[in-house]
View 1 (cartoon, one colour):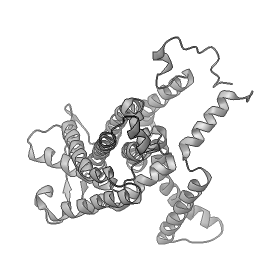
View 2 (tube, one colour):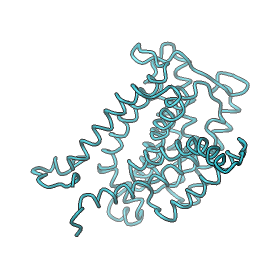
View 3 (cartoon, one colour):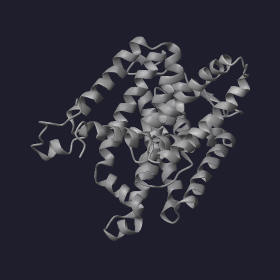
View 4 (spheres, one colour):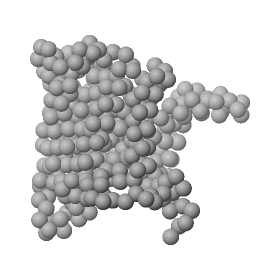
Amino acid sequence: MLYRENGQFKTSYRSDTQIFPILQDRWAVLAILLVAFFLVPAIASDYMFRAILIPFVIMALAALGVNILVGYCGQISLGSGAFMAVGAYGAYNFFVRIPGMPLIPALILGGLCATAFGILFGLPSLRVRGLYLAVATLAAQFFADWMFLRIKWFTMDTPSGSVSVSNLQVFGLPIESATAKYLFCLLILAVVALAAKNLVRSAIGREWMAIRDMDVAAAVIGIRPMYAKLSAFAVSSFIIGVAGALWAFVYLGAWEPAAFSVDMSFRLLFMVIIGGLGSIMGSFFGAAFIVVLPIFLNQFLPWFAALFGITISTAGVSHAELMIFGALIVWFLIVEPHGLAKLWSTGKQKLRLWPFPH
């Protein structure tokens, strides 16, 4: 009964096309933001910030970028880890080589480097699709791994390719504590998520979805496939590049090319598949699933085995995590291929009609 829309009349196009047309949704989003920005920093421990909250926020940002390309435009990509690496090393070079470079412009410039890299490897999407495009984007991953490992200029001539940053500041405020890192990443996530939501509702977003559904029909009605596909690669790569820079600067602090291996690309793809393709909310659900589940299993499996008098080693826990994780992914693909966002949408629709379904 609390989710009914009785009395909520739309008297203008502006009110009818707003992001959250239902009043309860607007209040719920406001409450979530207040909790995330004010309550969580007050009660969360340092371990929760570093192990759960900061990785979740950054991964949700990266999943947003992947979802724009894969979910909204329908272009399969296995090179997301490469785009994160380009964003991280690009931001690092601007931050280190230019004296006095502020952190936020360095992150933006790193994202622009990832945009150029994404457009370059997005050119095959004009000719190939499906599995062939996935292989083409996978080539970007292998190229980035080779480039940052062999070309020493990108890593300031360090032999191993490992680099580090320190003394991060934004407008004179240090970004050193776990709480400051969390709030900084959360603020960027909120701004980018709002921009992405408005973008997919705009004309370019409708072009992406038309290309996703049937690119030939989209071209017939006047949509330019080249512009739509490359713009999706550009926007997606920029967001993923910023997420990669945050992952390197804020979460890791010191990193090497192996931090953005092909495993990272697969994790991001699993996030959008589990969370829900073509859904901004699904990016958050998928990131929460991927980040929280391994930590939960790592704590739960030894306790569950101890109930039956079984001692399980650390290696056994790791193997069990992989098996359970893979089984859950397959289960989600079979039971709900549209992801957790579809379950959330169905639940909201049921609440809007309950107790009088029609």
